[in-house]
Structure formats: C-alpha cells, structure tokens
Length: 317
View 1 (tube, rainbow, N blue to C red):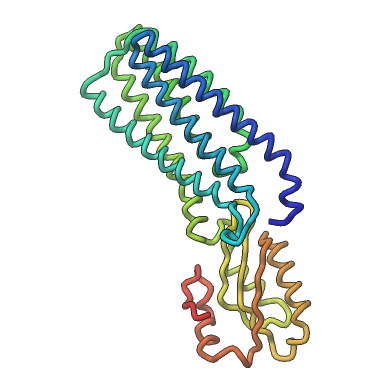
View 2: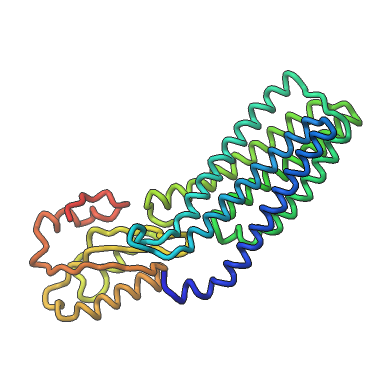
C-alpha cells in the first residue's frame, strides 16, 4: 500500500467509520428499547424483533472492526498488510445472511401448514418503527456499500431486515383487516428468495479473492499475449495474477529474454510494468528475468501454450 494511496483516503475513511458507528449505535439503541418494551408490555414479538435488530448491529460491528483492522500497516507477520480483513468480514456476513434466508424459508413453509395468529396492530407498529431504523441505517451505509464488499454485506443484512419489516406491515394489515393468513408465508418466502439470491451472487467474489483467483475483468490469455509481444521478450511463464484487495491487483511472472536483449533488461522491465498497469490495471508487478539459454528445455516445452489457463502449471521454483 503506497503512502499516498493511504493518505488521500484518510478523511474519507474517518467519515465512513463515523457513519458505520452511528448505524451501530442506532441499531443497538433500538434493540435495547425493544427489549425493555417487550418486557414491560409482555410482548414476545417485540423481543423477537429486538433479536433481529441485534443481528443487524452485530453485522455492522463486524464490518466496522474489519474496516479498522484493514487499515493497519503491514508488519513482519502480515507482509501484505491487513487489507483482506474486509473480505473475511464480508464472507462471515454473507454466510450468516444465507443462514437467515434458509431459516426464513423453513419458517414460511411451517406457516403454510399452521398460520401464526397475528397479535393485532402492536406488531405492525413495531415493524414500522424497525423499518424507519433500518432505512436510517441503510442511508448511513449506502454510499460506502458501493465501493466496499465488507460494508455491502452488512448493508444487505439491513435490507433483508427492512424487507422483513415491510412484509410484517403488509401481511399484518391484510390479516387484521381481511383475514388473509396466506399472505404472511408468501411474503416471507419472497423475501427469503431475494436474500438468498443476493447473498449467493455476492459471496462468490469474496471466496474468489480469498482463494487467490484471477480478478474478474482480467483476461489472462490476453495479458500473456500482450506481455509476450513486448520487444525483447522471448517467452513468459509462471504467470500468477491475484487481487490483494478490492482495489489492487498483483502479477508475478518469469520473463525469458530474447537473445541479445539481456543488456536492455531494465527498459524491458519498465515497458512490461507500464503495459500491465495501463492496459490491465495491475498496480504491483514482480518479474523474474531469465536468459533463453538458462531456460531448461523441459520448462520451455511445458510453457508453450500451457502455462496460460488459470495457473494449472506445475510449480518447480
């Protein structure tokens, strides 16, 4: 992480932290208010909703902690720094979101067979208050969720909760006024479906990054062909491309220099790095140079047309 990179994100990061912290405060406050209200009013529904909001608060606390950890500088035990803490947090929050979705499906199916009685308007009013809190939280975290997988996961927890509140308001109103009990499980199933769809479509990106997958949007065959095309390069092998975090990609490769171009190694290196950065958006490039004569025959044979597809080549550094 270059110094200037860290510097100009600094006050953005602080204001972002403040917004996430406010979202945590709002959700914890609501949770406590609902628990007190539930005990005083003897309402289990209020306490159940408090637990819902508490799960939102927990997902936001995880996201907040990960943001803080991610900004710690690299050290001897973490030479890449802690930037991936946010990816780990996203993975945790998407996993819990999937569990929430599956639990809702289970609940909905049960309610098709045994409709739950809705305890009048109190439930609808609680849901309306919870919805307001969820919308406040969503507003606080929406802008951040666009650029950070970590905050997006916490944001989706909130969206899921807001949808749950809307379902309670709509279904509760229809059950009280029309007696349509079937609305409740149908609404729950729709929301569960949406949550699962969102979580499954997002979790892949986090897993891919943690598994050192090629970043989406980087075409390895095109990259290798472009690097091979640089004057003075005879061949290229041991190509690895991975994402350090959501903003920075890295490349390492062995470059075989064409005969007679060994003296130009430095300019060739500059050309390769510039090409990787400008055409493929790869900020960190580590290149190892070899002379064609050094490159053992087996290695050369193995490389031709083979080292390219997604790193299935043999490691024999």
